[in-house]
Length: 396
Picture (tube, helix red, strand yellow):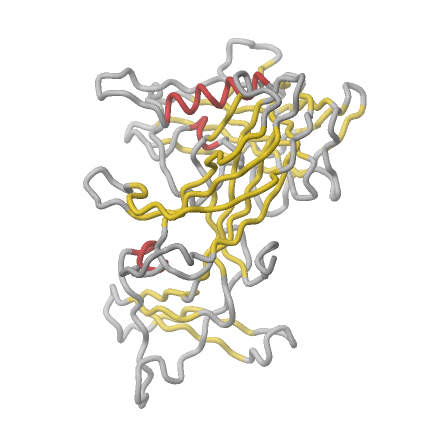
């Protein structure tokens, strides 16, 4: 199995294209679990609620089926229902009204019913204030982390934050981050070539993009790679669960708390967006249990992890194991530009090699004097994992 069900829910927090994978639990054959991913924050960003069924198969893989045509509501302060609409572009995703932001001190509860009539609701979560991050910095770690047990360690930029924990109250924290790395290559065509027509000045008018066009004169396994048209960033998301309780540090200033280890594949500057979430005690316990199952494993003799039930229940069948957690959290955001001046000279093969384990193969046009002459550049398509737009904080 490719990824633990509970782990996928981290902060989807369940960031795709994650840097670290974790094992999924062994589920009984044909077992079907409802998976809920929902986070209410005070950020001015889209906050979808995603619902899916996860079913085990005989080949030990999980099949995830989106829950469509559900009726989904978030109840604020126990009295105000906020109806979500089903996303027109993403199956199983339900969207809050445009401009919605959670408010510190307010309570939130998730309620939804499936098309078949099953009704579910979460526990009530209170959105607690998060103290600001006062400083972020990084250090060079030559030993870094290993991608596989038998591989050499990849050096990292370890990222740390300082913040002041509020006194006279219990606080619980969860960190997530988003990384922007400069990308030079924006298209790969298998047994084909990239075609771009009528582009004109970037942003000046309509663009007619054909993209990869098949060329049967090329070998079946041939791959040509095409450079990006303009500046482009690939986006990566955290997957490790990083939590903290102030039980022993209440009211003190936290200095040098490690929130990320960013593998260094190239010396170009990169930006990490750090989000510090203030979460409830129950949410902290839930994520700590997931971390114990996925990140703090012991020996091969340990029992395999089981999927963890969160704070969502079936009203008619409380014994149903619903995976995931409905979370309400205030977020403090910090942008940290890693100039990588602290990275010593070395043989870094580049981001493309780290992603695809090969060097780019550049097309040669007929009559070209040098490789790449006369070739079109590929568009940097804006999406979850790539953007041509300047990341917030890049020029700070």
